[in-house]
Image 1 (spheres, one colour):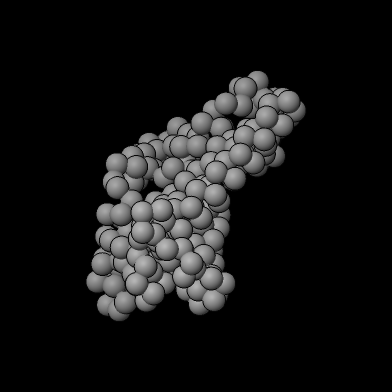
Image 2 (cartoon, one colour):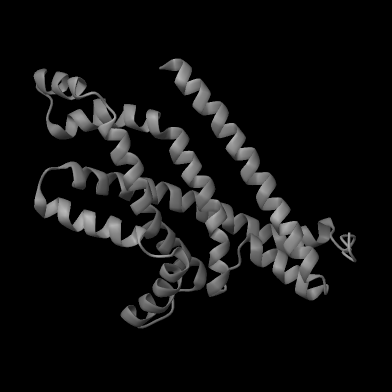
Length: 222
């Protein structure tokens, strides 16, 4: 393999360097997904409320976040938050805050599309039986929107997992950082990056395949 030597890689390296970073990458993905969907749904409801007081700030936030490279947002939050509060909060916590704030903008667009995909007749039916706007959204619209958008939400989560590698820019110990650290210590940086790429590919390709299966099942149910 052109001088590459992968024999240095062992379970000891996984347990010492890679496992810690992998766990953080999973935690960051899970927290950012839950937080992003929660705040993204709120942003979507604000944009669909028909009230300018809610629509304008939500639209500005979503369009603003989606117009910035994620790595710039990561660096910006990492430098700005300590400046505002007067003390550092650590790379890991800064990454969590950044990803929730950033992913909320993307999940917002997904949820907005999901809500708008629900036939207006169901909205009118809920109103006809005396439901308020909040009850209609909670009991009729959002459950269907979540089901319709589930494959896209999961696809965005896979992209989010890939993007967690960017926290390397602020020194957070993620999966890529674990491989990089092992590569530097054992003098095998090329092999470490290659193995990291293989791990990312296997995980994301496998999850993408499962999402396609799920999407097919949802299409059958419809």
